[in-house]
Length: 565
Image (cartoon, rainbow, N blue to C red; front, side):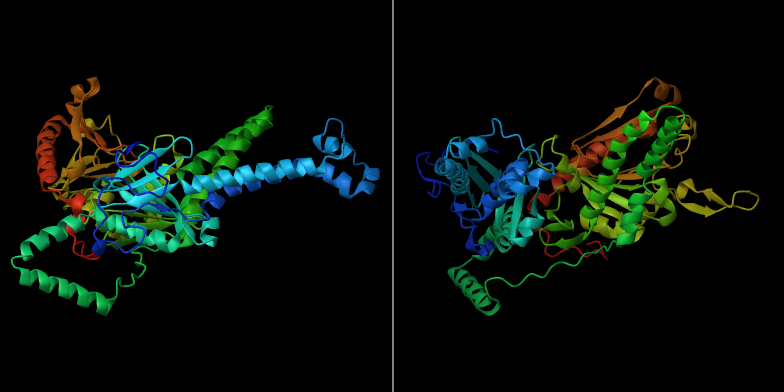
């Protein structure tokens, strides 16, 4: 992101074109008139949503504070019923006593004019443009700022429609950058324009322009061939129109409302809250009633978190599109995020023990959100599946990791999520089911690591494929971390004093920050050292073959979730 563009004339108006700016996107790749490389303004009603609502709140507070004054003026007889208004030092009383109605009215009109003028100038000086290289936004009246998001660094595009904006037919577009606090926001555009602009940005970021230029160079062996291509494109446009209608993609997962609510009710947070309430109640009965006041804010906070989480997860859908995985959620404020291929740095499948009887799982991801660490809204963009069955998990994983071979999915879903393979016990053994270590594709902790992982040493393990690093851990809270090797930053081994005594070590994959913690402990030392070399070589090979940053060059169609290819 940059704060200054040398191609922009600082003395020019907000609608002026740059002196030697970048070129406009190819017309064949854009559909919106706002994606022509020129500077455009946002929706005219943007000041109403960005500042007008704040003005209404201020007016409401002022009116509430003058409630007694208004009652005394318009209902003077109510003072006999006990309404006592102290007018000493009141500015309204001063205006009435000195007959300054006209002066007060002019002051109020002047203040409103200044506010409305400020909102108008803020809208007028807030412009954006989309070129063939980046998305730029410049704003500010006295202090001018300019932000630029290079298209080859775009991590995704989010479309947010708050409830009031939806009623006005408007939406907020947020281009996700690669750096911290590096997002570019277009708030607000009309819903139709925002959908078209988002598609244009993703199409330009996908490398389709480079792919088409390469194809044209290869096919332009003669002028006759080039002329034939031009005529063919013209006929296709006449027959099909400038843009074929795009249907809303159908979600591959359907979450019933009852399952969503029940998953929050039986969560570990609920158990801890109940234990806390019981403990405080017992303490209050035994002579410390002030503890009840300490638990009330916690109850309110957890209740608000429950309601917010449930409302946010309603209307959830996830579907494949040519530009990436499209995730939509939210009842009042609808958020639609499109995550292009190769922008997911880690995936984690989790299952609390309370969900195990129902067979429910959740999926979270690590991605570059372009937000700073203090932004609490960044967490809502890390949940790919709030709650679902094993079949739902497999469908979502096939969208998030489309390059995984089909024969690997059975191992990931069965052994990776549930645990080691099982086989019938041989004759003479008492156990009805015995763990078949040979059938498990994961390298697990040795038996001597039992003091470090008393419940999960049989399950604790890792697996390396040509494309992925799988880390399986947890017995009470099952977790499976999936790290694409092409996104891996580095790999590390750590070993403490107790690890050295037991000849085990810890393995940790270094990835971008997020809810997924890609580490594993209590692994056999020799296995960890061998995995260190294997993962390092595999990551270099995967990064060398990776072309996901230009996904239009190899993705010809949306991913089929049933086939995984």
